[in-house]
Length: 116
Image: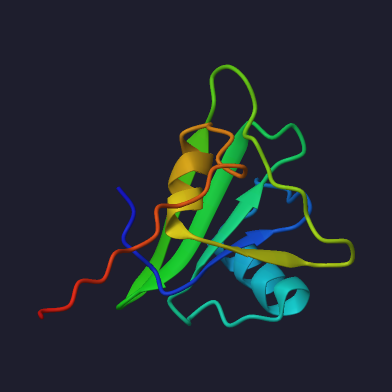
């Protein structure tokens, strides 16, 4: 179960997932241009796309989640050319870590009711 974050970033391109949280923080700063202490979630995947790591800062320490698919590969979106990161929704993140191809599915629009 993941804690909701204000922002979720998926790194465009593979990452050596033998890296620890310290090395992933360096990737976040140097390649993504973001602050690892911001509370945002940062999602990384390996070359074979069967392993995903999610790193984020929560109150007083880093949380590092990892999921490896026993069969199949994670479905990834089409990344914009020249981009180092892609902002994704928590809905898309949930689909990604479940191994679903959620990139073509639209989220339900929130309904806003007003008293008459």
